[in-house]
Length: 94
Image (cartoon, rainbow, N blue to C red; front, side, top):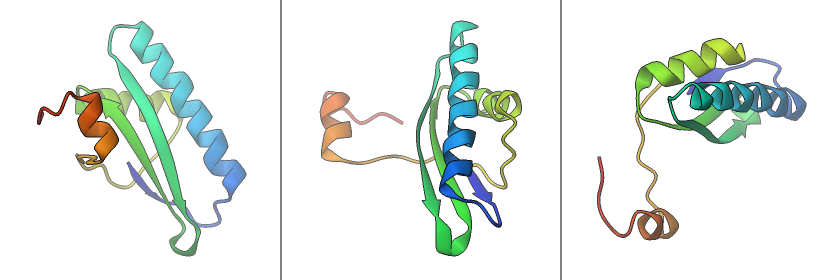
């Protein structure tokens, strides 16, 4: 999720991520596994990028709704690192 957030500070990002994690926990308990991986704050651009691991786009939308976290854009991404390849057993997944 990408959010243009004028005036955002570190405490705002931390609080927003806590709300999203709480909402992800609720959704996971309801049977839709979802995980908030990280948030990246770009102070100079007033942008927050939040990486979410989910099976369905609708689950990300629901986490955003439950967490009270509006966003401007959502895009599917692939994280490619040595650690992610090892975690997935070296298999490519889409």
